[in-house]
Image (cartoon, rainbow, N blue to C red):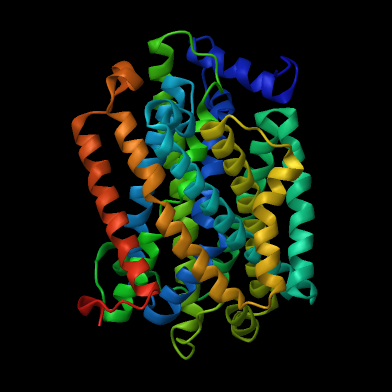
Length: 431
């Protein structure tokens, strides 16, 4: 229960007043900011760092258009997930449980749970690598530090939705400011950047492979599940008119938040293009990028890079745990204690690192697992939003459904290419 005098209670009261027409203005609209900001963390996680560094170092500004296209697909799916939660008051996992056969639901839960573990592996590794490089400590100690900080932030959830949204939002701000500093420090060729953004091109087969990686890993399974849960029952909505207003506001938040995430990803590519493309095109790993940045752009640029990586690892690990809890509760009606939920997804990450596995290889394998899991929330969302018995008068227009289906076909096809490549199956069009 959210107390009316708490931070979350005041935010909910403001939302009700705006929806009812009693309050207006930009300050009042800030009460609605939160769900899309949290979901946007999935698009700035440590996995994006490695892909964007490879794109910029290897191909300069040429693949910026891929980042833009990937971001547009992400906007559409996150907006639909938010719409589902607002209209139904239930999240994607709960609706899947109630509208799909029980055996299929159990398979969906198992696949989604494995995906949550793979997500946490990538996020933990990102934070751990950042702490390891910044403090000069072993990777395992960096993971332990990431785990402690993550758990501390998760305790905010007991105070309602608003403190958690502000905590995650502050870390998104750190990532954004860090990359703003990087762009200001690095000698960006803005003419080439605009050209790469507006002129689609694939210089060679290697560029196609990286483009597949960027788009194929765009829509994160846990982000689709989570967004519907973040918007369910967040505001008090009495009728369809209130829901319609809430959906419009949510769509604006999704566009702004994910546009911000897209700009950060573009900044990552531009920084790598500026720093590495000429003379250091072979840079492909986070650790190498850090060590190479120091002599090229100076210690401040390298430190800003690490700070953003740590903020990314911690925030995305928190978001991954929240999504894991929602997935388990939605599919199985099981709500684990916070410490146990944290352990379910955290322990596998520690086991991988303690075994001496290469951090970059582990990141790659986590993306393979996420590729396998992605059809579960994507296809379930597409199926549910077109059902009048679920969405009522809020079934999206046919052109929106068609765009979502096209986006799903593109993303899932590219994920299949990633999977085939990961298992050593040659594809003539990539050779």
